[in-house]
Image 1 (spheres, rainbow, N blue to C red):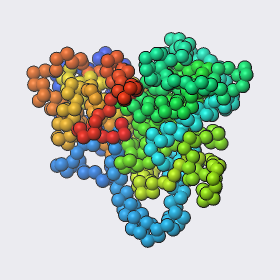
Image 2: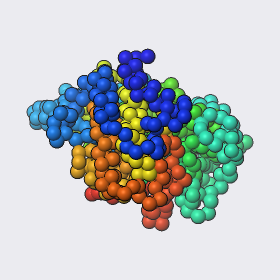
Image 3: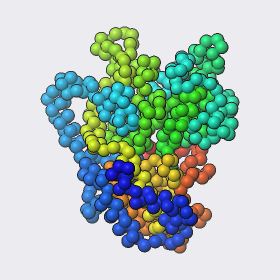
Image 4: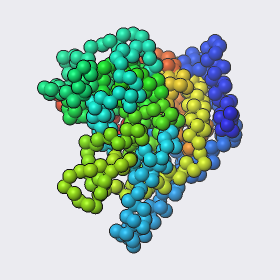
Length: 553
């Protein structure tokens, strides 16, 4: 047990003890009236005093907790805080590298190598060896590259290089719930009522998939599986990738994707952590099950990179994308990253070839010849200012193990749930984030009536989270700068706001709090967002301008 893990054991052991026996008075959903607050404040002080990561807060430009106007910032799952070293680095880049060296900085300042250099800096945080990650473009652009390239690789039909034999029928293989419920035997033909799984598919051009192997090689790999609760943009991108490659789309609950893969599946797109509920999905098991069906998998790591161990190399992930402005604290709109497993890089055929990924970028040849390695993921000229801000931001990780960050994350979210259960009377909120550590990311989502108004008031009182329509409060816990006193204060202010809004008790029809899986009609359900004539999975994202709406999920 590491020093950090041991220091967090007080909170984790407490929750485990409650879960093992009868209903714990601190477990979510406790029917008792709000408990004494002093005990939790004292407990928070003890935990903060023994937290070996507590000093990392000084690496960020944040108000000190002792300041009267210090905010509790629990929105790092939308935009991370500003690392202290970034302003000086950006000033140096602007004044010296751009202001004095100018064009010479592409060589003397190391600008040209920045996408791969910063990719190698991110690599250990997501469990990847050097040379497999390139930084640049947005998550959406990188996702499009990854999906189209994955379909093209799958349609080449080279058995033995995709992680499995290509055999159909993966029921019983690892990959989450539904592996024994016949999902693998579902017909690949789409439903007739719209796009994606609830609408089935996009029209398939005549002859599509014909390149997926020669005579006797089995059906063409012309299907893209999509996490049914995905962030809406991922669904839009998947639709576009399907149109380009002649594939159909089928949306499947993330826990059932492994079992749903069949002989027609080319690639599965899965979110590691659900952006609304904070549910952590089974990356090792799902990847193995997808490979067993002869398909590839693309993982969206936006809500896990920098929050928990990912293990890309260890689990044989094919391709992955992620943003850097959440738990990696790269700044608003900071460039995303693209991971391509080393063994697949020579076969990575980007749908967006550009001069930056050319084998001879300054040769200006009329025909495209891709560079070797991770450079193939580039397109055009890198966004140097935001890229070098990200590089400076990543210095906060010096000497920090992501395993220790994960241990504190679980302890923090456990403690926050304990405080909510003690302070907030039953019926005011319902926890839709799984209680099980193996199924929880680094955020807590609470279903709450009038979530938008509640979050507005929380922010006005110095507790900054966000919300997702129609009724979910989200609290993101970034262990690099969030402490236990922050968690206790957030729960206390939440209880005060709810008490003032409903002085006579909980809102009509409200259910008790509780961890576990979202209800069928809640944020884990297959709600939809209209997009012209299409409906895509993933639920609604708040409109710009509201309290705590944030951006980038």
